[in-house]
Image (cartoon, rainbow, N blue to C red; front, side, top):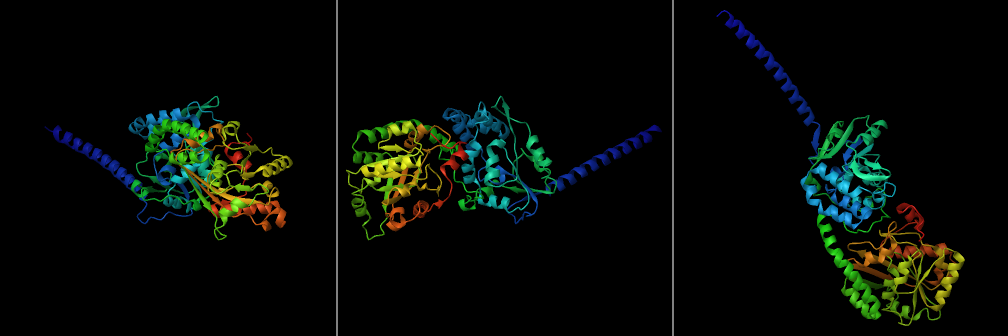
Length: 531
């Protein structure tokens, strides 16, 4: 019995020690959790972000209005791999939604990139920036851009998809994203397991030495370890992002002038469903439209083409008391008229021909001057075309000869531009004639672009005619006064070309630039655009 108090005291002391250690451990866990929770703040509650600190932000969560990356992967699949690869990705969409964020991302990466050549992959530079800019939230953009320190972007997507957009168009200093594995110059559809290479590069450059402010999205666990180095992390909720507005074009840090690719719509899951449902009907509609144009009489074909969705609007500049239409009928009786227009699509001269048929005598011919039209497009063109040789003397003589035979239409930009900008006008046309009529063209498509810089040009008319609807607006401006021409007013060819560019820019509310055809093709295709 004497040993019982001893054993009892021993048990009590052991219990006290265990309880003390457990309590201390629990206390430190609660304290750590409390200090960790104080690190995170919700935006929208009057929180102000420091302006002079290094900023790390999650691109999809803190910059883009939509947190879904599926549309961007479908663009990669369609533009880099073709419609069949894009259709396969679309069929896998339900599985992508069910397997979770990380595995869904891996499936999309594999389907989109396996077998694609690393050297020829340019979608991240030529196609995706347009769609990223359209998805940037104005509020998220202001949060990121008002930070005056170094800006570091973290992304879920492979770095090759977003690097050009973030660095070239938003002026972001560094991008942290996973790299794609490459074997013998081809992507194998797998990503690196972590962000080690790009993150260590940022650290090695000394951009993460100072205290860092982070902006992340709620329910985002992929980059928790990256944002652990931040002193404070501001959280953006999906509810707040639903109220974000689109970033206005005038706030783009770098203007979007050139972009490539065939898809004009943003391929969300619903839009992609309509896209693939439409494609068989689009091919049939292409054949019907082509047959109507070639088989029916000219004016009758215009009515049927309008019925199939190819609509247009003719606007006559009426600054001279309603005599603009009469002038078009009367001037140029002794010599052809030179119609100078901006270039939006391959069919610009055809639409001008359709528009002029409403106000000109039917016996007047119209010839289109082309720069580098594909041979296939020249063969199927319903109007006479002549190709420039890029020899100034030969081209001048050829155009003068054509003007003696009838009217001439020329696009001095030399290539198409999809955005509301005008490229530099070549001054060759200014020396040829003093009967110059500017024509302002604007063209809107609903599903496919009918132009390309890096793709197959012979498919341009096919994609354009596959659109459910298109709308062309042609504004015929006043004939250029002789005082503004080279022959009658003593102006230089450059002054005349710039004046015509300015007139067309004002009519369309487009911005005039000094960029050329060569600039476009060097940016989008890496060549000078000679076909």
